[in-house]
Image 1 (cartoon, rainbow, N blue to C red):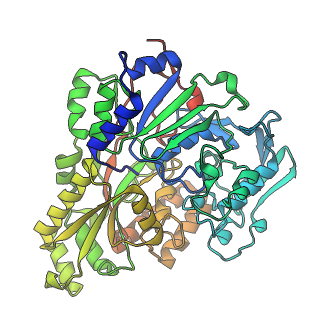
Image 2: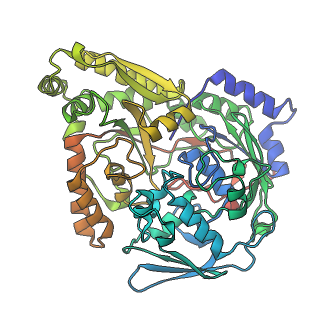
Image 3: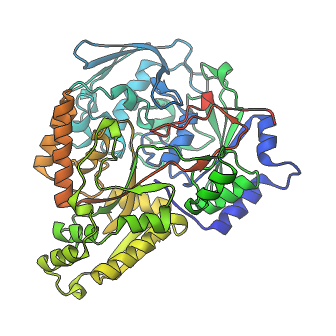
Length: 540
């Protein structure tokens, strides 16, 4: 999720961190093998089970490693803590053999029991992991996190011995290895997590630099809120000899214009966002530095279906019909996005969704639906607040353009409410909002991934939407291996979303960021993962 902060503050932070140097930080960093990346979110947490930001995941991908890893092409599954694995003929049992030289950053051996503990923790409903749904194919996992069976020992994970970890699925899932690459399935050390009450407690001190024990190619050295997160090479990592970088410095700069300024000033090697209105200049003058790859992300509006007036699907559909998506792109996101008319991004997993009738621009029909909902006089509507993550950058511009469209096309004043990232995340989790600007970055290349957003009880169902028919179709698609049948199921789910509009699709972004020529091994990919072991800096 992309978020913003005051540009001037960000520049002050950069100056404090970088200091006054005769040579640019990127050149000095290349000589010292220290890479600097700006991130558009400060990390709300470094707990792999609780992180929901794609930017935080960049840090976690350096600190931790799961059973399997993935190449920077975003497709090739690689051995991680497990050096090999077998999958049963029925596709429901995965047996992983852990490498004997896998170590935690404090030198302790990593065992299968660590993974049993970590997986059971993910599905502990008291912890409340929003990303746990990625593992719902595991037997008993969904029952545990939804409270139907609170005994996490019933979850299909086992350790026959210290070097063997077995996962049993409730049904075959072709995407399962890709799911295991994701942050919630990184192992955490039981000793340190329980010492700081992290089994059920959010914000536990086990993630602080002085306490954290991790198992990835890097370990946490510094975490100064809103200023700097620095990770340094982990010499205990089983493949440390192939890790080129000595350190990575992540700078929270939650405004894309400030990120671009820092890049031009030679203060960062890689940015996480880019100002859309500068794309044409970079493409003409610095085409090798601007990266605009496609990636699997959907941007949309989330309506809280339990808060008035959006508890009425007619109102939700009216608000969607009042949006001119082409105008929105032209005004804010030209060169880096295109309008979307479905919850699923076109082409995800080879699927091409139907265009939602609720995503067309039709102000007259929008007004008719409002009147049908009992709001012929829009002054009868309650006060409406449109929540945004952050007060700066194109996120704010999007909010202001949508505010103008709703005023012009519906006669409704909607208050734009920018909030800090941590408040935004907490509002999502507790459903303390009416309507907000939201996004979803896919964990794997399959249309089912974004469609989980409307599944009852799914931790990522921020709208709070529930429809038994939708749930039945979703489960059919989840357990089916027949491509034609799955695509038919996808169509049915998209049509339900188009009628009920818990989410109003807006646009599909490109993954806009800057990469310095000194960076070697960076490979843009559809799922926006970074294997930091494959990244290096060449001598200037």
